[in-house]
Image (cartoon, rainbow, N blue to C red):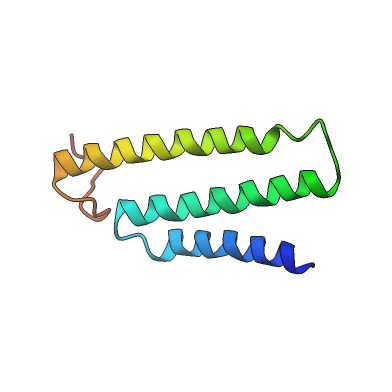
Length: 98
């Protein structure tokens, strides 16, 4: 495994571990998701450059567009949760309540 692959794999794994072990607030969960998406974007872009695949060069931009849509939806959910519940703590959110 090259050092570049190791660094992007470790960045993705660190984001995944942060998402699973440190999920007290919704904002920290969203930041971990953004870190994972950023590591995937950089790895996908470098992979397309490394193998010189011209037909695959639009895929990192598509992933970046989906990441931006995911971030905006997450921030909208964060604002809606903060307005209705008064906090962004994930322990206070109960999906069974109306």
